[in-house]
Length: 483
Image (cartoon, rainbow, N blue to C red; front, side):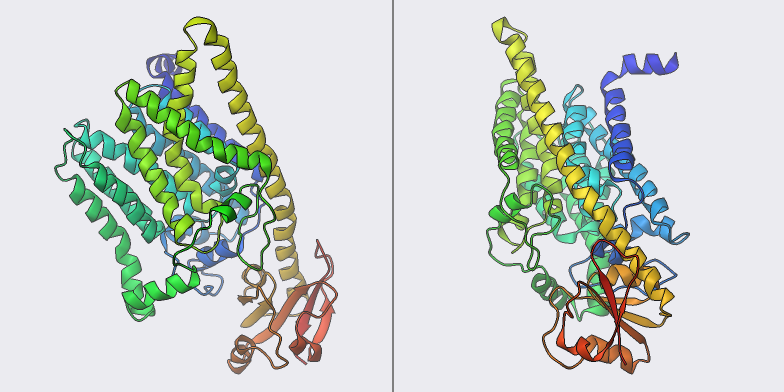
C-alpha cells in the first residue's frame, strides 16, 4: 500500500526508477556478466589488481574509472563480479543523474530522456564496462540539471556542492571532457535574470579538483603538464580534423574506427536515425520556447553539442562511445519534442496521427538499438572468451611469471596469464626481435608471442618455436617461443 501511495504521489520518479531498473536488467540479459575484458578495460583494471602487473598507462588516460572498479578488483579477479557490480552501479547512477531533472521540470521529460538514452545499444553495452565515457555522460547530465536548479534559485548550498562534485567527477574520468562541459554552462550564465552567485566558482572548483590527480601524475611520470599534454595529443591524434563520416560509419557496431580497424560503409537505417536527432532537437527547442521553458532544452542541447565538438573536429578517428555524453544531453530536447507531438495530438483530428508517429518512432528506435546490440555482443563474447582460453593454454605450456606476452590481443591474454602484455596492431617487418622482446629478455622474463592464423605474422618469428594453442576459438591460434 505504501508503494502504491508513493507511485501515485510521485509517478514520474517511479517511472524513472522503472527505467533505471530496466536498464540494469537489460545489461545482464543482453550483454551478460560473462563478457570478457577488452584492451582498454584491462589497462584500467590492472592498475588496482594486486594479482598482476599494471599494464602501461599512457598519457591520455585518467584514473577515474580505476577508482570506480577498485572496490571489486581489490577483492576478486572475477570478471562476472565486476560486470554485475558495474551494471548495478550504472543503473543507480542513471537514476540519480536523471532524477536531478525532476526538480528542474516535474513531468515526463526526465524519465523519457532517461529511456531514450538507456535504450541506446552503446549505453547497454558499456553499462557494465570498465570504461569512462558512460560515467562522463551521466555526470554531465547531473551537472547540467543541478546547474539549472541553482541558477533559477531552486537549489541551495547542497545543489552548488553537487554541481562541483559532478564536474569534478567528469574531470576525474576524462579531464578534457570537463572543459567542454563547463564551457557551455559558463556561457549560459549570461541568461538574463539567472542567479550567478558562486555558480562560476563551483564550475571552476570542480574542474580544478578533478584535474588535480592528472596534473600531479603529469609531473610525477611524464615530465610535466606540457609534456603529458603533448604526449596525450600524439596518442589520440589530436589536431584539426573532421571525423563526422567516421562517426557515421561507426554507428552500427564497430567499437573503434582507427587503422588498422576497418569500419565499413555507413548503414542507411543508422544514417536516418542519426539525421533525425538534430531535427528532433530543433523541434524540442521550438516546443520548449512556446511553453516558456526554453532554457530547460537549450542548455542541455548546447552542452551536448559542445561534448561532441572535440571528437568530431579535434580527434582523427572515431569510436561510438565518444558521443555518449552528447547523446545523454541531447535526449532532453528530443524528449521535449516528442512530448510536444503527443500533447499537440490531443486537439483535433491529428490526435491519433501524432500518437502513432511517436509510437512508431520509439519502436523503430528500440528495434534498431536491439538488433545492433545483438550484432555487437555475439562475436565479442566469443573473441573475449578466446583471450581467456589462450591464457590457459599458455599456462598449460608452462608459461609463468615474470613473463611478457607479445602479439595479437596480448594485453588481454597477458592479464589472464599473469604476465605483462604488449599488443601489436601491425606486426613488425624486421628480422630481428622487437625492442619490447629484447628488453623483456634482458630483464630475465619469459617471452611468448601469440597470433591467430596459420601464416607466420612477422619475419622474426620464423626462428622461434611454434606451438598450436588447442581449444582456442574462433580462428586458429599459435604460440611462438624463442628457441
